[in-house]
Length: 380
Ligand SMILES: Cc1cc2nc3c(=O)[nH]c(=O)nc-3n(C[C@H](O)[C@H](O)[C@H](O)COP(=O)(O)OP(=O)(O)OC[C@H]3O[C@@H](n4cnc5c(N)ncnc54)[C@H](O)[C@@H]3O)c2cc1C
Image 1 (spheres, helix red, strand yellow):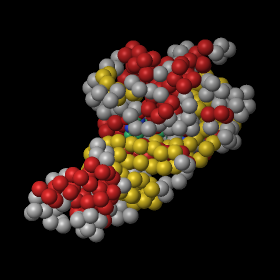
Image 2 (spheres, protein in one colour; image 1 turned 180 degrees about the vertical axis):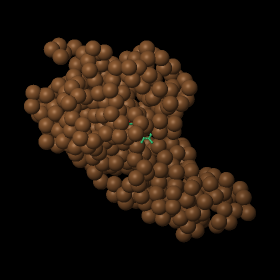
Image 3 (cartoon, protein in one colour; image 1 turned 90 degrees about the horizontal axis):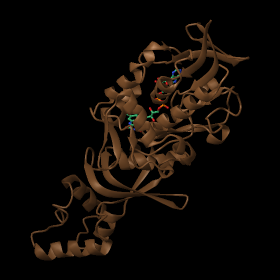
Image 4 (cartoon, helix red, strand yellow; image 1 turned 180 degrees about the horizontal axis):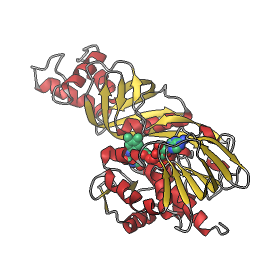
């Protein structure tokens, strides 16, 4: 039996960050089901890794995480990365990226040092786990390990093996994901920027601005991902999204603009009233929605500014999962209140953020909190 002080299950963002911060005097192991550590980090931010955001605030999360961010937020994270050797920059929306613009740099920095003092079990998962004085773990390879402290950092939707040790879990739901719709006639592949999308859930209206990408039977783009987060949190993806294709004009202004166009240009026909304003495919779609009733500029303006899309479900391209270990079932140090010396961090905890670096910041913050607590704890 290999004996450890600390075992971390999952060598992703939070597990690797935590391992880097744990005192070197501990005997530490990482158990990773994949054949490489930190694979998901490479996919983040379209390969650039949007690792945090200057505007961190509980408003961007499903839960209030102010007390954790007070301990370790963006500034402390940047200091840790700086110390590890990572150079970063922020873009004009406050998103933080590695200076190299490569997610590889983030992963490289996180794995640079730990190889010397952390045992890494790749392609390994736990087949059995129970707790006596210590946690006794059997891997599917039949190897047996023991540890005083056990940390779960296995990401979303993968907590099956811990149910007996900690049962307070909110069901996982796909979040930051494309949404299935009815057919978006003519619009497959069309991107429309500078739109405003509104979603009403439980009498609360969520507005997102940005670019929407239409697919044959789905909608996508950062603003749709963000709206999907609100749906995931209530576990219901059947919703109505209202798109305003010209948010900088009021409906009355738009009606006047369309009337003026008709007055100024007698060559305008039913099929080209919107030409020059939108992508040709969107013009066609909008005109058809208005039954080519283009003399009625009021109706056309209304459609452009209140374009209903009914969502039916999600696709499988989710970036995160909403749900997980309930925060109220954990101590301030993210230790289980049901099993002592058991910790949870990262996405397997019921904290999910919108797009913009918020989810990785939670992985860093929670990884730090557990490492700090264990470093301060005596008696290993
Ligand atoms: C395509 C994509 C792009 C993203 N872009 C961004 C971005 O730019 N900014 C941002 O903030 N967030 C982004 N995210 C979200 C971000 O990657 C996650 O929030 C973050 O990685 C969560 O960290 P974690 O440590 O909790 O889990 P993960 O990083 O998912 O790590 C969990 C690890 O545990 C392993 N594992 C799972 N189950 C087991 C098991 N039973 N036993 C052993 N090992 C196990 C997994 O293989 C994995 O290596 C993106 C996600 C995706 C998919």
